[in-house]
Image 1 (cartoon, one colour):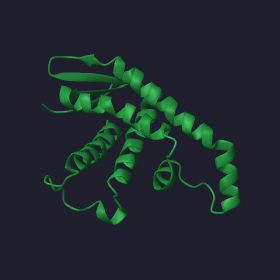
Image 2 (cartoon, helix red, strand yellow):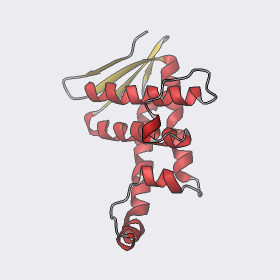
Image 3 (cartoon, rainbow, N blue to C red):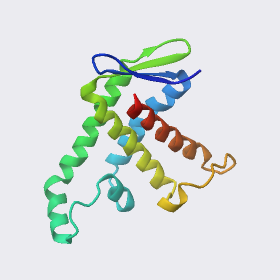
Image 4 (cartoon, rainbow, N blue to C red):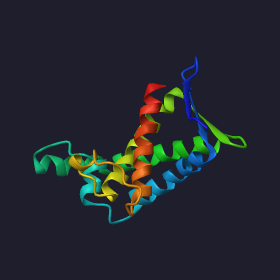
Length: 160
């Protein structure tokens, strides 16, 4: 069964996925939420999800003090939008259909990209290791496959 992504005349993107892929996708908002809301979120994860706005440490500290909470709340609101859309998807015997309205499209891309960033950090991926061949025998093969899938999904949504 193939995946389809198409844009309707009104700008809505319709994503048709096999049920198994839909189930995986549906599990991701809760996973991202648990990462964003845990008290020990720090280091590389914060740097990737909330990149520096200023090179000067004092300016950066002030920026984080003023906007840090808002940036986190924006990501959590994005997750709520994604979860509501998933709750409304049409489920058939073999596949699911998800409608992404034009006003939510950027939020979906943000969600998919944030999930990719989290997986990359959890897998310890550095820019220079991303191009290594996929090894299905690796202990983290499922997570790596999910990262590749999300990368492909992001591209598919953009192309639609």
